Image (cartoon, rainbow, N blue to C red):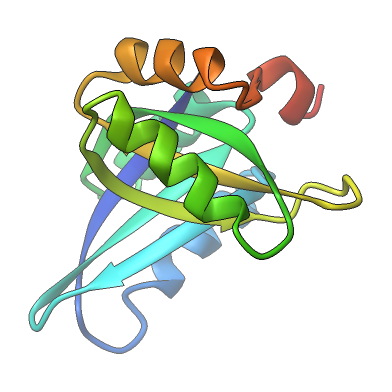
Length: 143
């Protein structure tokens, strides 16, 4: 139920995003989804890849600093109120959502959101109890 997400801290300067992307491309590692958040002097690149261990080792050998976090993916109805419903379930469970980003999944009428919580297991239990489909990595990741 949990995905391993790679987080890279990048200086907020031209071409600094290109470096990890080129490193992964040369290693034949496909980025399935990503999120980039910026601040004045640095940014955080968050990545989901099929083989996070290989990607982490590849990036670190190229000089990148990589942190691994657990995130969950869940399906949301792709209609007005779909996200609000999920957020209501999360709020009722008393969970703090640290961040999220979206991914197109190829299921008609559904979207996938990756979310990070302090208590990942508790959030999964709350979401499942609220009839929210928490996506298993086996469904999502190729190969």
